[in-house]
Image (tube, rainbow, N blue to C red):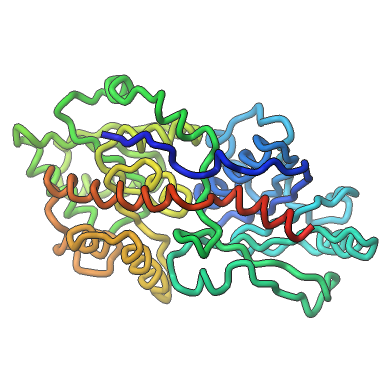
Length: 378
């Protein structure tokens, strides 16, 4: 069962004067980058701010956040030419995930600074539980060259402890969860009372065949009726490829989901008994859901993601079974090491997830911290 206690202190966000914000998002992983930036922009607007969201690829918004957009939030193409840059640079400029703002816009920032109205320039970094996050959060970075030489950018790190920038959550999230009809959602998606609903939003996990073999073997047990809910894109393609390679998998109960707006994605996480998620935005949403979850971290060629995943598991205080599942799922252990999913195992994982969420509830959220930081530096 979901725990609908208040999720985050965002409801205590202080009243702040309205400001204009320019947020820049260069898409690497189309869903995660866009998801974080859109949720940030939308929540700032909900709190009385005005936001321009600059993107080099806004195609995912067609289904993730379809128009009409909230009043005060506009989406713009990447400003590569001087004519693309507005005359009224925002009071706050955010570079999301270390993207580089195009030179014409940097020149406009420098011009505003020269006029004595320098914006608060923030580098909003990737989410991590590693130790360096607390050390680097809120540190200044003075630009030494280029048109903005002499100006300062500030590092702002989301995170899982009081020494970081916190996590993103909307003010209305507790109310949305409290009024969510889980039974109705499951019925509408063809789930029966005895089904164990497993959502799959992933890349290509090395241990996916092992998971499918487990689901196939367990499908005939009277108290274990797994049903796999597939998100569109790479997760669906990975499962279809595995099923083509192994005919026995084709009898697994599968429900194909459609691309959906962010609020509906949240509802899927609330309704499922196990969420296999990927990237940054979905990890945070799965944490707020409070259901058992496994994170497929974005893979890096130098395996830097291994340390990042282990740091997260350490913060999570993950039991040995959950840690082993993560390692096999992410290719850090042999696929054959994937623990056997059972109802008892999921109950153990949910205890861990609810305890972790309770720790997060006591922390100040990302949007509140951003507003406080801008007020401090303005």
